[in-house]
Image (cartoon, rainbow, N blue to C red):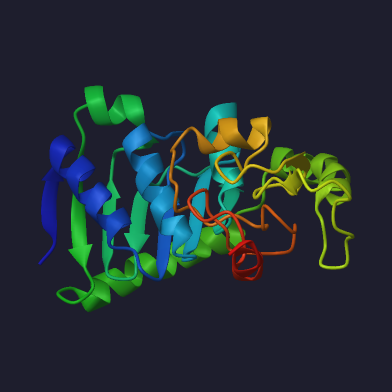
Length: 237
C-alpha cells in the first residue's frame, strides 16, 4: 500500500532510496541544488557502477558546483527535459512522487508532501510510474553546457592520459596522478596532482576507484590507499 510522506519523511525515505539502489537510480527534479549528505550517498552508489540518471528542467541551469560534482562521477548521465514539473525519485524497488525538488532549501524550509510506492506491494502502480519515467528519460536531452565541457576538455586530457604503450619515466622519482594520469613526483602517500587532490578532497574517500597506477601509469583500479598496481607492488617488494 502506498505510504503518505511529509517533509521529514520525504527526506528520510529519499536517503534510503539512494542507499538501497543496487541496479538503477533515477532522480527527476526541475530544480537541482543537491545537499551534501545526498551527494555523499550518490557518490557511493557511483562507486558500485549502477545506472544513475539525473533529469532537470531544460530552462533551468544547474549551478557550477553541482554540475562539476555530477560530471566527475563515472556512472551518472545528466539530461534536461522540456517543461518538466514532475518530481520523482526511483530505484529498482521503490518510487517516491512528491512536491519536493532535489533542492536543499526545500528539504530544510518548505512544507512538502508525497507518496512512497514499493514495487513488491504495488507492482502495477510502480510499473505505471516507471513507464512514465522512461518516457521522460527518452524525451530528455543532454544539456549543451555538458557537451561543450567535454569538447573543450577532451583534447587536453588526451595529452595527459598515459597508455599502456607509454615509456616509463627516465627519472626514478617521477610517477603519475592516479586520477588524470599527469606527471607528478613519485610519492605513494600523495598520488594525486594538486587539481585532482582538491576534487578528491570534497569527499576524502580513500577507497574511491581511480584510473591509473601511480608508479607505471597503466590503467588500474587504484585508490589513494592503494595507489600502485599489483605488478608494481610486487616489484617494490
